[in-house]
Image (cartoon, rainbow over all chains, first blue to last red; front, top):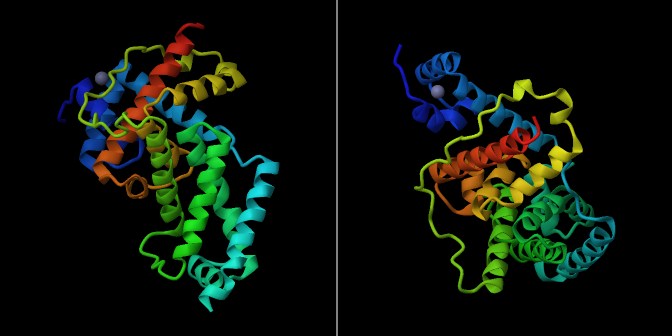
Length: 85
Length: 190
Ligand SMILES: [Zn+2]
């Protein structure tokens, strides 16, 4: 099995997480991760960082603002009626 | 729910139900993008408004070469860039540091050893917000579009107007920088 360095692994890390590596590189990366504690820690903590971020609630437009915006945009939208006929 | 083609034709007829669907589907998405760029609610609202108005103007020419969401994000992103440039006219927003070395991980505590509640605490969420706020804007955009809004790397690239490989690099750098900050935060606490 081809060996890679920690620097190489770091380069591939996002592609590894997103499963964008080809079969061969995936196997090489897996092999490195199985034998290198630092890199497996970096992988685990990066995945958890992404997970924590995705778990955060999505912000939405505050209600008052949203209402105002809706009214203004709806007016503008409907005012365009004649132009496209 | 209309599909995108149906939605566009209904919008061209100025169908008010179509407007409702458009607003419900996209206003929060565009708002989040703008807020992450501008960090100001009034300005973010202004960007949502301007992006939608531009869509109304272009409805007849809209060819559907890109998805409606990608198109709106792209317009909104550019509007944000304009506003940022007005704020700081002398600052180059896009000075290129995509070629820089990757941020090397230096804090290597094992998160498996952290008490379970560490990873679910509201504090961590706040720390993550702080960390995201410190990201260079161009990294932040790709990261949030990808991880929060679920765009593909290709779509992120289209929104920001960069190559797919540049978008990948930005995403990767953003992930590593955030990881590092959270790791440092945890390291102080164990
Ligand atoms: Zn390693």
